[in-house]
Image (cartoon, rainbow, N blue to C red):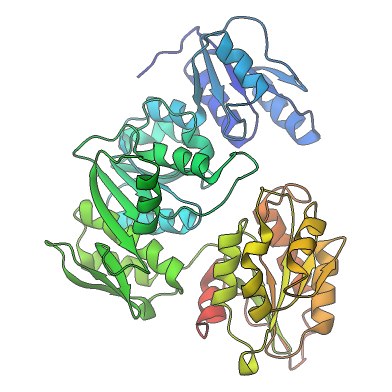
Length: 483
C-alpha cells in the first residue's frame, strides 16, 4: 500500500469521485490540491466541505497548476486526452484515476463488472448472490459509491463488488479483478471516443492486469469484437450469450443452460424471477457464472435471483392511468438500451405502433437513424427534447412523426392528451441527461412526479397501479406480455 503522508497530490475534477479521492488522501495525511474547470454553486458547496477537511480547492481553473506534485488523480469525467491533463503528462507527473487510487489502498479482492448496458443490474445480482452465501461484500465504483469512500471497510470484506465504466478504466495502472465481467459492447460515449474500436479498447482494459488463475466472464459477441481488435484475455474464460447457443451459458426458451463440463444442464428459469428480456437473461447468466467460479451452490444463487427486484429508472412502470402505461427508462442513455426497451414493451392491438416515445438530451455522438426501422414498427410519435432534439428529428422523421418540445413536462402532457387505452408513454432518452438534469436519476424522478400529477383524484375508477415499490419490481408487469 502506497504511503501518502506529506506527499503533494493534485486531484482533477470535483464530482463525487474526486471528492472521495480528496477525503481518502487527507485521511492518509497527504497535502491535497483539488481543481475543477467549472465554478458552480454545487461545486462551491462541495469546496467548502473539502476546505474544512484541509484541502486546497481552486475552481474555474482553465490551465493546470504549475507547481510540482508527487501524484495526479483524475475523476472519471476528466478525459486523459484533454489539454489540461496532457500538460501534466508532459511534465512527467504520474497520473492515475480515482478507481486506481481506491484499488491501491484496498485490502481485499474485487469482482468487477463492465459493459455498455446492464452493469448496475448485474452488479446488484452478484452482490445479492454473495450476501445470500454469507460472503461479506460492498458494491462500489460507477454504481454511485466511489471506491475511495469504502476503502476502510475492505479489511473486513471477502470481496469488493465493483461496477466499472470505460472512463474509469482509462486511467488504471495496477487495477486487477480476480473475476472480470464484460457484459456487452455496443456504441456509446462516441463523444469521448473517436471510434467504436477506441471504446472497445477502453473496456478491454478490465482484463489488462489479470493473471492466468483469474477469471474472465464475457459475452460471446463482445469477445468476438475484442478478438477482431487483437485484444487478448490472459485469464480463464467463461462465455455467455442470449443469442449464441455455442456459448458456455446460453438462453433456451426462457431457460438459462450451461454446457460447462463440471456444471452442465439447466441453471435457472426466467419465469421464476422479475427480470425479462434477452438482455436481462445475459445479466443473470453473468451473475450465475460469477457465483459458480466462487463456488456458491446453485440453489443459493437461484433463491437470490428469484427475489431480486430491479433498480429504478430501468423500464420502471410508474403508473397505469385510463389504460395507458407510463414507463420510466431514464437509464437508457444509448441507442442499444432504447432498442431493448422498445422490444420489451407490450405490443399494440393488431401489432400497431402503441408507444409515445420521449427522447433526447445531450449528444453522445450516435447515428440515431440506426434504430429507425424499429421506430416505424413500435412508435406512434416521438417527443424530442434537449440539445439533440433537432439532430434526432432529422434522423427519425422518416420513420415516425416527431415533435420537438421545450421540457419533459410538455412531452408528458402532450403524450397523455393523445394516448388511448393500450398505449405506452415511454421515457427512453438515448442521450445523457446533463443538458437539463443533474443525472439520469433526476430525470427519472421528474418523469415520475409529472406522471403522478396525471393521477385522477381519489374515488375515480382510473387510479394508477401501485408504483410497484420505489424499486422496479413493476418492470416485470410492464414487460411480461412483451415479445
